Length: 136
Image (cartoon, rainbow, N blue to C red; front, top):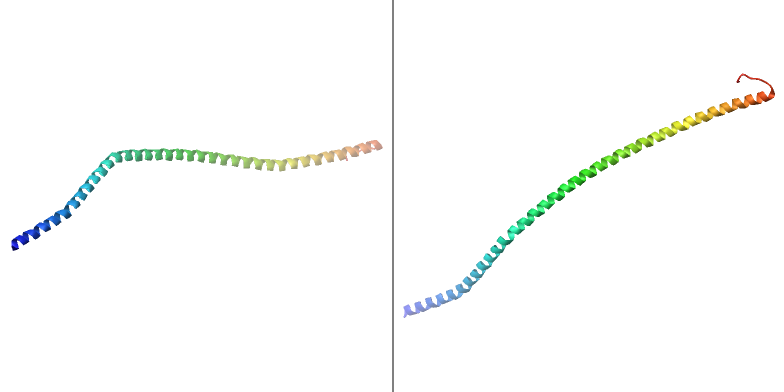
């Protein structure tokens, strides 16, 4: 009887263990199948992703090259504008200096005309009065 009882307890324990292990094995199998599907999908998607990443990197390189060329062009344009500004400043300085020299020359010329006019006026008056002077 003890042996029958022990066999009965062992049978119940085995049934309980099997009842516990069967759902666990079913869940492990489902998890393994899902993992397999995920790995298969990753194997299909990764090459596409790598190609797209490579294309994006190449596009970025092209954009960077274009930007470098654009910046170089802007630098050349900026240098040209700087040189134009310097030329304008030089011309402006020459015009200011030339204007000052021109004004001085004109004032000297006007002073010469006034002096000549005064001399001619004095000669004309003395000539009308009948006297002759020697330019003085």
